[in-house]
Image (cartoon, rainbow, N blue to C red; front, side):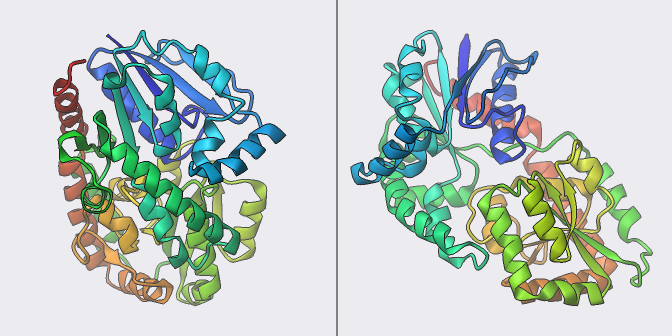
Length: 403
């Protein structure tokens, strides 16, 4: 049996949720004994990196040309989402027309932005479309993000109407669709005319770390902790992504960073970023660990993890990582709802940036509560999102079709 995974980011050179999800899909397929090929887009000339779990790799070079940009602009008037035209355009159509989709038993297309690829696949029954997050929610909430630049708010507002039409069309189609959270599933059914018969929830799995290990890590950090010690907070994420960057900009605008520092609390940003963003964060009193080779090793010394995103949907992988580190989480509702956390049980809800300040001070001064929060979160994550649970869900989805 042969399977093809199609993604807009080459997963072996990209740090972020897109890469994690793509690698997970490949792993799930390999676990079911599929021979897996990868079809990926790249803005740069990219040479395939040899990987044992991939049979063939096909990389579509999506060049930045004048014709592509004109095509993207004109697509707005044809009611096609901007990001869809970014990937499937005059530059890439020729490659896709020649690609042999017929030889595959299953084709998994990852993310709504690649929905136009459906046009090139004759047998629609072999498609599993991984929408992951409902992007309509992302763009609907963009105006809530105080740190998001005005130009992006305008772009997202235009894209909201286009992506809503595209996702509604996708959800009405007969082939299987995947989502990562119950919140997105319920939104799809209620607001976008989704069909329960071909819509499935498939979260990401956690790395294999036992609850015992999480508990031991939390004990070392918080049992008998001196409240006069520095309290170190980390924010993990791909800082090239607007939702991550805008949440940090919002913190800067709120002026809570100096108040945190005066209480011996620091924030370190850990993730992919360019030199310009690294300099910007440092100038505004953040510590930075840029482009880490091993993210979990870099993050293991911290006392708290945050996710104060306002325009995001679905499941935030950073919450998995904080839970595995055995540290308490402060998050916005937009971040935590996708994973199913309950306020004051698995995390602390920050309603705004000033509320985040209060919650950070509370955790610093109450290590026993921080410990209990970490334990509850670790137990919830390790039970609900284990590899065994997720692969069982994926197996059932595959078996329900004629693949």
